[in-house]
Length: 70
Image 1: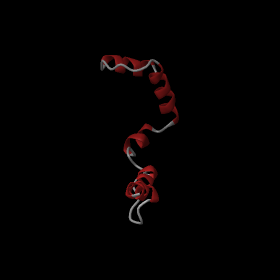
Image 2: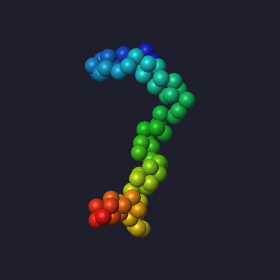
Image 3: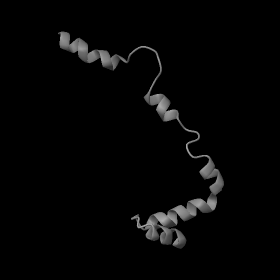
Image 4: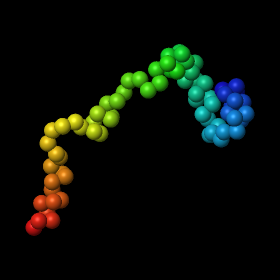
């Protein structure tokens, strides 16, 4: 944590004081090579839910148009 704080200060980046210690604890339990090599891998579930492919339009989208016609 102390070395991370030194690097952050040398880079003239402002972070909350708890981040270097938190990151140091995280890195102790993980293989850093795996973290670096797998950046962006996995997940995607939220994007698939947010952007459904094909199918009928949601009923909510049609409801305002029907109300305007009345």
